[in-house]
Amino acid sequence: MLARIPVEDTIALVAAQPPTSNDPGGQKEDFGKSSPLGLLLLVLFFIAVFFLVRSMNKHLRNLPASFDEPDVKKDDTSKD
Image (cartoon, rainbow, N blue to C red; front, side):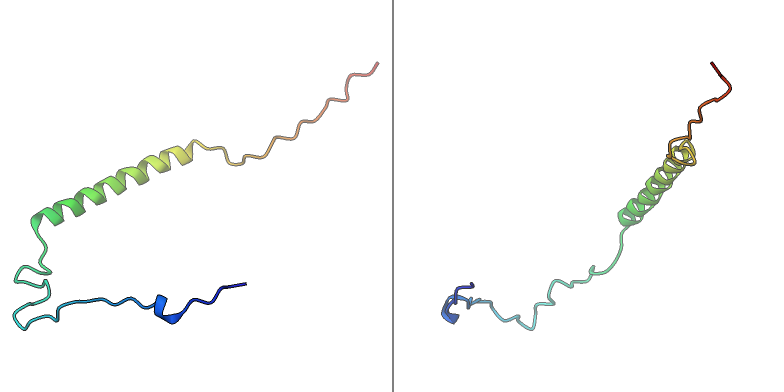
């Protein structure tokens, strides 16, 4: 059975200063602009993904078509 917790124990008070009119909230003049470093990282990411997919395809080609055990048939040609 769940125990009852008083409401006074569950309330948290948070003190925060209100934003001033001069504060843009972290959005200064360079906010949202990409840099050449970002383009370089993106190109390197796509190159890495290309080589990973290529390697995965090489490994998948080496797999057998089925992992089922082959049916072993006994030869009935030997008669005693």
